[in-house]
Image 1 (tube, rainbow, N blue to C red):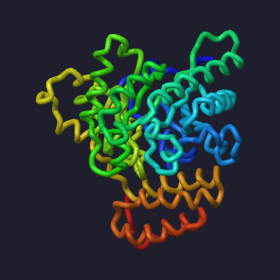
Image 2 (cartoon, one colour):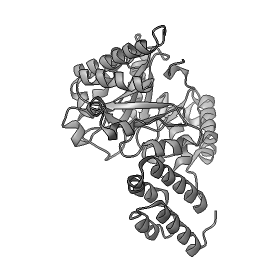
Image 3 (cartoon, rainbow, N blue to C red):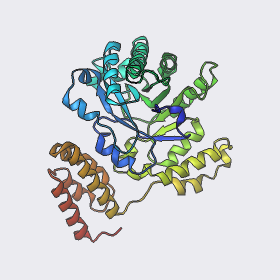
Image 4 (cartoon, one colour):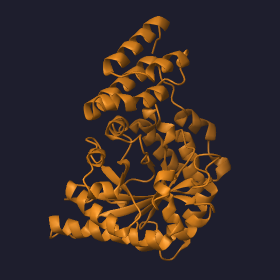
Length: 367
């Protein structure tokens, strides 16, 4: 059996990051159906919930049926990560990501998420513990394998200081992390202001210039304020990252992960990565990779398919969770306020279909 490896994925990478309350199985399958993603992440899952077999945690661990799935774990103690990791490997996971970037108070106050950037030594032990657990368990399952399960980390620039990532990120690589994803804000910023991609670029250079870390040994991804593939192209060219994550820019916008568009992006990046900035045909590339314009029927089809998957995997509760996605799908339409005011109160799949059909007829929408 071939084990997942970051080094086996084609450069450059476009990824959808793990997002709490967003990247559930239904969402992952919708975006994976576009064909441009090499993998998807689960929502973050509490290691203690896995250890105690919490039903919701086990539900969150369902695999994406049409794409490689990486499980993201959060917690605060190395021993908990060891035990939970062995469980998820037994469940079939062959790639693990550690959350060191979540700014939510209920996570940080318990020492998890971005709080780990305040305790780099403990975070180091967590990475080592997770790697050891994953491969101890793998050798129980496949005694003769010489392959290794890889562990990655997702973090922020820091807690308050936006240069903390330089020491913390390097330490995680020394612990054995094979990929580092950086959101360009601090914990203090939460999601306000702008992502500082200059700091991400400085970290890339730090890693590349270090004699310890070859280009093939560790991958660096950037995240924050990227909504289109054109903006992703800019980040690849300017900051030389291995991958760009598109999070909030994917809400109601699955086409951002279409294979056709991402293949164009990859071609442009490979062609122009060493080209002087002023010699790149920026206007031409923006025309190819800029914001995709949806017609109503296309949005309607996506929304209904997404809702059907939510209902399939979570029943009526899935429809409640779908409400926010419906708001995102139809945010830019004429009379969108009227439509969204109805969709945010839906309780059934039939109700969603009825509202969308009536809206389409009322305004005689085309496309």
